[in-house]
Length: 282
Image (cartoon, rainbow, N blue to C red; front, side, top):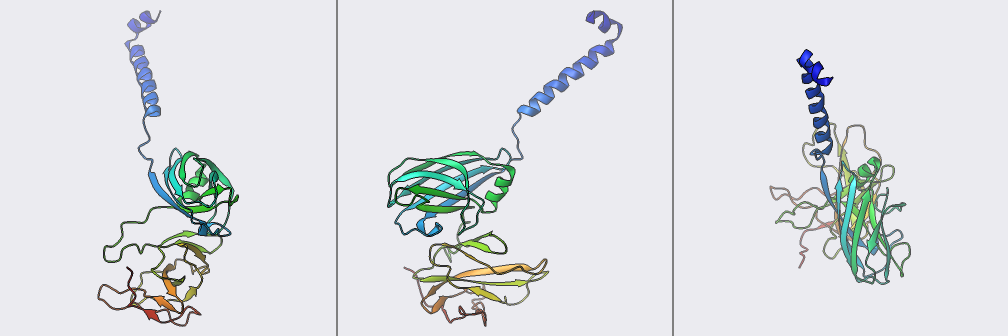
């Protein structure tokens, strides 16, 4: 019957070939890898000071977190050491900025003991992918010493390569609840506390010296903290710095490319103190 139709109307064979080729094309496209996916390599540096409330412990840990933003698959691989208690559970929690707690998103596997490994992963929702990319997830390792978590680390992109002339001075930020800002920073050498200064300008580009309009003392020395600068005007450009503080003296804001000292914050509260430019780290 089909052969008779093809002899009578060769177009039938052509149509059937097109249908068959179309089916193969659809199947090939379905099986082809999604080249539009971006693999995000993130990191969580864990400490007791980042727990809420903070935990006094010698324990530390580091996790590499890999996220595929199309499949929404996240994988974790890390280590921990010198815990005060024995590791019992490990999770990714979110959404929460630095200094706030949130529910479990993904359960991970830990090898137990006071030192060991962390591994595992899972699939996030579309919203959870956005939350993770915005710094609103953290890895939390629970132990017999601290059931709510002995060490914790916010999941952030790793800092870019440091400037050889000023190694290790990278600060990262994430949006917190309301108008608050969460920051991670490398603690300054010998600092007993850290301070955030902020300002705003715009719309448009900044011309001339920066103007500092607010400050927040008491960020601590853990390498992570929060401050609330309030809501800037629409389309305003927001900027901030984090500097170390040693008793009543703060670290320098640094120098410009012309070797001119950058402006000190003036009249912005209790943190408005002299700068120290002659302190060197070992």
